[in-house]
Image (cartoon, rainbow, N blue to C red; front, side, top):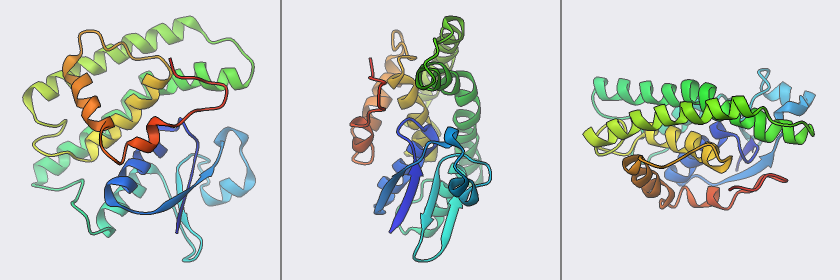
Length: 214
């Protein structure tokens, strides 16, 4: 069985968990705190980041959420999460990168640093950083509203990897109190649809020790 090395509020691990759920793949969770920099974990992924997906029986180790997600999409016979024309696949990948890189850098990453890591280190969060992250979140939600106004799902007519990447990042920001849904009815309705999917339900029960959702 697959083992997913992750921690509860890692948005990239959450994306992989959503893909595993959509694909109907069984797996076991292995708690990993990458900030502890364990040698055993860094042997699995020299970058020292979660997630890592491993199959000890086959001696297979996969690292990087996009590499893992596309591996699963290509090797598991379920409806593809990156499909359609070349243009459509390119748009899916653009939005995956937009959420994985830009949203994380501007919103989820700062929230994790201030409201999770600093709490674990018994430090006080920087209010200015938190306020900027929430302002950034509003701009991203504005764009998501525009996408949903023009499409059935974020990338187009069908639910895709882009929706999973976005939902994973937003779920962490929402858990950490960084999302103000006021004026974002389109994205809020889309997010409610995502949370109703069976693949998402395990994430709704997740709690990080010492950090309660608002």
